View 1 (cartoon, one colour):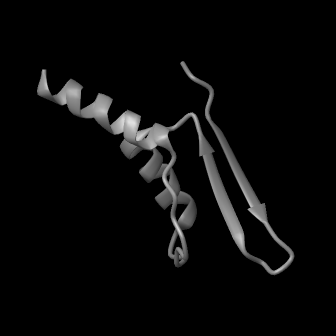
View 2 (spheres, rainbow, N blue to C red):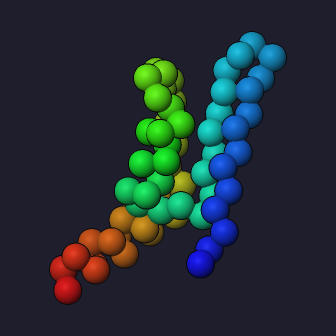
View 3 (spheres, one colour):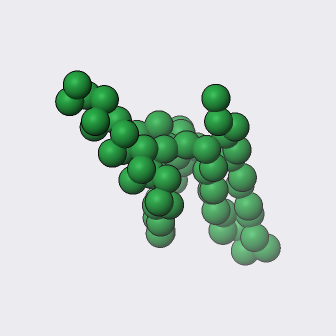
Length: 63
């Protein structure tokens, strides 16, 4: 099983970033939503692993 890491960074102005490593596809979205709670998102950038995971999940469901 691949190691999963969650990194939260809060700058001096109180802005935070959330970096998820080892997650892919909808699993990544679920973790992100859990951490975000009701907070507003200013910017969201998905890593290539997000899309790779989604392709793998779709292929599994088509079998």
